Image (cartoon, rainbow, N blue to C red; front, side):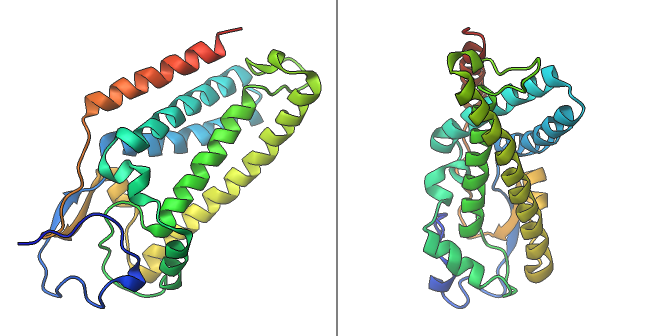
Length: 240
């Protein structure tokens, strides 16, 4: 039996009925454990970063930021050497493909996506970039009181103040993207009857049996990449 490739095909370029109506479905692992842990850890850490700022737990706030930066470095590397559905080249479609996908948002159809869809891939990229800006600017920020980032003394005060302003402004953008992400998940659930949350919890999704499961990378490789990321961040924040 011929196998269907994993690479994303824009929905308007697919046959009207690419999978037989009587296709047999089976649970397929589409998300590896490192990606799922990364996703939910970021959810918790972003929330905790907000809370620690509001309660002025600045030592905890900084530690949360360092952890986020470590996870971002891990995710960047995992996007090249990790499992197939984690790799940027697999889920970053063209902006035109993303718009085409969104144009069919109200169309109720089976969910045969292996990994992120064309629009979801861009949502992931935007969030990663915003988190990188947030963690990066935090390294140079100051609160005009007792707290400074570990690299604040490597730039002049005016630059640190400007980066502190970006740090505050960027978090508002992160909140907006989080709201858009939640709205998108709910929209897919209501309009298309697609459950996007369960696969990110269990790692598995029901797909036709003739679809090739994505390649999964070794968890030991993930641990090695994470250790390197943690070492890099530890060196960076303790170099002064």
